[in-house]
Image (cartoon, rainbow, N blue to C red; front, side, top):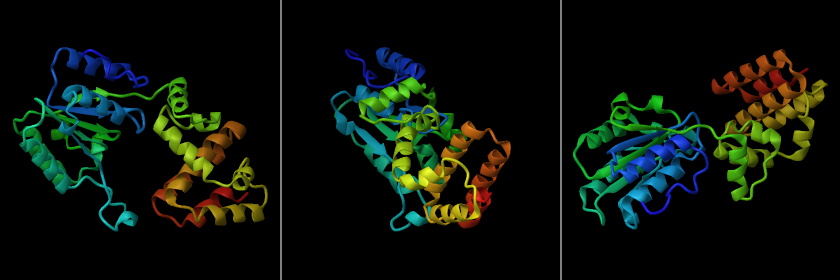
Length: 279
């Protein structure tokens, strides 16, 4: 290993140390599971760097697998890794590569459906010259039999300074409020920035504090309840942090918890925001 393959990976000392030792000693295991408490902390980028170090210049010896929606079913939330994709993995590994080893990267592996997971397990059990890298921020959803066949490589939340460093490389500026709810994840920080920028400044101005009269509260509720569920949940997290920092009101905190639960259980959004915003 002539150069450091992880030079562009911010933080993650433990993960980089484990993988660097594997490369230096040429002891690459058949399967790895990159885990973290949340998304967006560098698992995918590190997986790609590690895979490239394993295969060298033979980039065709790397297969990327991502969860997808079934055709025309985005509204049903059917994001998954399907059995057809695992069949593609089996076919990929059945042919000789340009080098001595092939690598399969399965991102967000918790989205494996049950049939695909069982088929993948059989593939993991077969002798081969391939290496699997599974990434997941919810490893508890994976089959224990899959997890047991993987070497666990832990990824952690980044410090605020590390998050800012990552974003600066991408020329992204982040407010302290958005940084505070990013939970050490550059990926989440980028989502926060996108979400915030999609909300009109007039709405955010009105939400600097809880509405003081019924008319304002109902107007805001009517506006926000038309948004998508993801945007509404994001706004709940943002407002909870912002209003707690300003007012330290435990009753408000309880109302946010209730609102989040109600949205998760598909209570009518208008009712959720009425309950939260009405004085």
